[in-house]
Length: 253
Image (cartoon, rainbow, N blue to C red; front, side, top):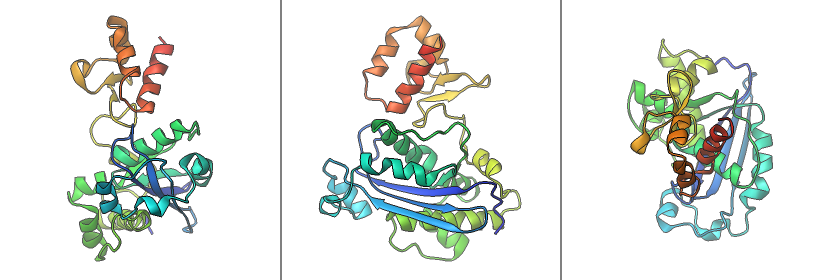
């Protein structure tokens, strides 16, 4: 194995009631933690989302209301999820755009903290898209010669994701087997200031709007020129973490 680790890396995947991180809820989480010595630890739990699972979502991941009726809620398991992740860096498939934003939103909702300041984020999909531009099933077939069985079950997807990353490191000479490189290579475009991509950092490291009429402007500049925009966003249907970043900028002005 050519993946050089100085601390664990947690491959994880979420199944949910939908893809709106500000409204939807986790129904299953699976984490496979790869340790620097090559050992693996697995954590998989289904979650009672405390809301109906839309049939469209159930038809994708195969988890229905009756499957999670007697499972613990996210508030009950969130502390053990954070404890299991520990100091590990994070990796997933499309994780920078969905799984990490969803995870952070759910943790904020139940007031459980996962420190992210020094934690690296590796998105295997972004590496794949930069190299081959296909799906997880195709990636597993292309890199590992395997068929993805039980697709869209969290544990099968995390196993496939881990296998694909290790195969990518072996295949490409320009892919370095260290977490710093992989996290940077996983970035697509500007570095996000929040996990939903509503804010990004500019060349000076200042958080800027990444949507709407103020796209490209710094948050601080917009709040000084149009103070009402703060209230509009804080009262709007934006993810909690996006609002948290906005609040922090305002508090530091």
